[in-house]
Image (cartoon, rainbow over all chains, first blue to last red; front, side):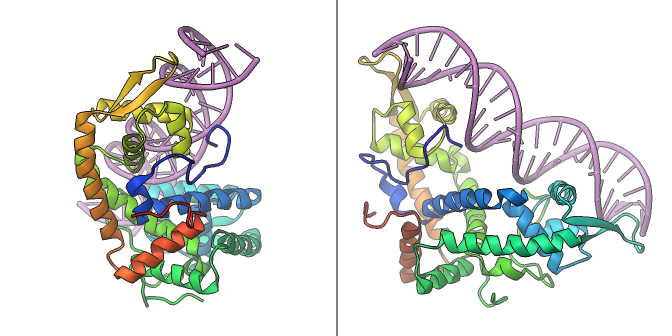
Length: 160
Length: 160
DNA sequence: TATTGTTATACTCTATAACTATA
DNA sequence: TATAGTTATAGAGTATAACAATA
């Protein structure tokens, strides 16, 4: 990635001006850092962020149709096809025929998928703790709360 | 984008489980929202987030070499070439020959680039206010401070 | 030999549109 | 006619590697 050395948030001697005042720019930097940590820590399972989201949604909402999954994830149907293809190739997910609608498939986890998702979820939680490691417990909670507020999720569903 | 309708953070009747507890997942959702708002509001200037970053860095650090720009932005040199090509095509940036090193170019803003960057920056600041609109002034400041802490930028350079 | 900018190439991600088989 | 899944295709974005000119 990026030829060699890791990304330096601030190169000495460089003026960043307004960039240093923008929440959006800071969000993007945090997201890049988080993505890299996610990819390296999940490499053994061949899991990417969208794959993890899809597995979690399928595990908790068995019998979902591919079109429904696409809507939940906010992606195009063609993207959901490739996502499910990948998860099926990895042996995590299965397409089950739907007797009541021969066009559609019911998405379900395999045994291996269910087992591995447990380990993957633990690894993702460790990753999440890592990317927020510079915050103390109270700051971490505040950060999460503010993010939820920004996505308009206040009080809709309370997480654990 | 995404076939039709806008992304729904929570589809009714769907269980999100651990996803709702992860800071990383929330960051990603906020970043997607912010990116879409950025692209639509900057469309008139043909400005993307990396192009804005590059223009700002070049304007504040005139005479930068392409390789230095790449390092500051954390991208490969080939990426910087395409970025500068785009900004040059838009008439915002110019490659100036460097007498002391015939291999390199000195990157500088054009008059148009300087003028437009003023308007673009105002639009970006309006965009930034928009994506944090659901936070009050104190929360906005807290959010920004926590993001800076996460990227290890505490106290290195204080923004305006 | 190393570095600067460039080009060629490839890979990922995601989108739209057209197709098929059902409904 | 509309919908579910699929396929084809294309466009961004970004990466590596090789290259010519220069140091």
